[in-house]
Length: 108
Image 1 (cartoon, rainbow, N blue to C red):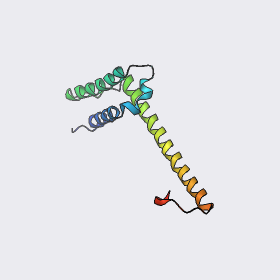
Image 2 (cartoon, rainbow, N blue to C red):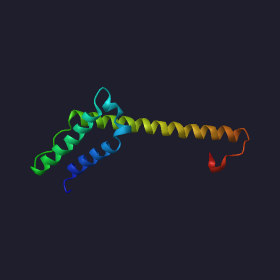
Image 3 (cartoon, one colour):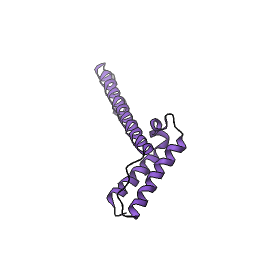
Image 4 (spheres, one colour):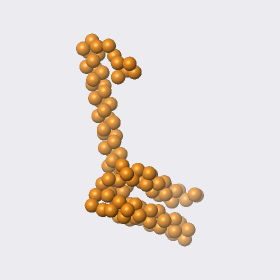
């Protein structure tokens, strides 16, 4: 696909669809999962149609925007959880080392 904007939008669509069961929970809130997924796909199809007609890509529809925001919120949550787990592991390691306990295998 030569068009950079279309390629980006289609990749974004694929990313949303790959993580639909974990990453789009906020987009589904109060809505049918089928509706959200159908509208995300419909937007991708509209983009391909606009590209074929040599028109500007359409702005993302409501469901696509909600899915995008949901995915970003979940990624932020996953990152915060990973950071908290790393900090907890480090804290426990420091506590073990300061208590004179031998370090666990693997550096944990």
